[in-house]
Length: 113
Image 1 (cartoon, helix red, strand yellow):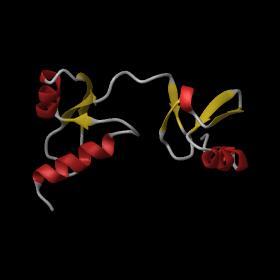
Image 2 (tube, helix red, strand yellow):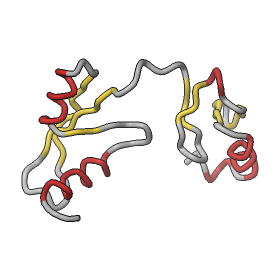
Image 3 (cartoon, one colour):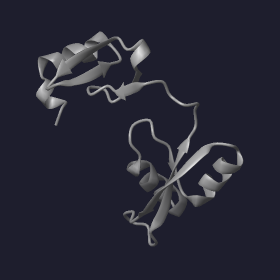
């Protein structure tokens, strides 16, 4: 598949972080109408897109519990259900699985930069 809409969608998705949903104004307006939380992130220059685009973060789920991003697999981990956590350089790192915790413990410097 190719075309302007596909290119724009790919560029917008490329700006998103783990667990984040981003959209342009048209989708953000529809999400707001549907009762979703919408926050403007500002205007971005996107590769191969002629005009700068205002991007919006859209909340698709209820408010999350206290949590963190697993530094190994980059998955969101609720602290209440985390498999494990480790302290490194006076910071807590939470993990979705013992496998991720073991990988982190073996080489924490590879995940904390």
